[in-house]
Image 1 (cartoon, rainbow, N blue to C red):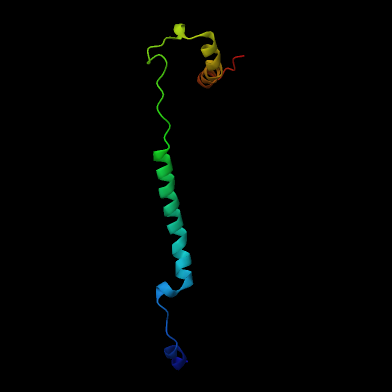
Image 2: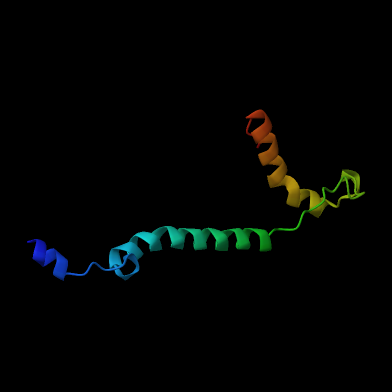
Length: 86
């Protein structure tokens, strides 16, 4: 039995398939996280200014602009008070 082991050469770790299988999992996760960070930083949405800070008051908004903001205002009020306004 000792002769049998001495005649067989042990492979280096980089020649074993299982070593690369174990290493490839975390390596793929690291590459995917770097791609995700790049997409998040590169694809940022621009910051929109609030209409009051832009010098436009709610009195200067047209009826169409006020109506377009109605769903957002209703959702904001519902989130703040918990009362559904209809």
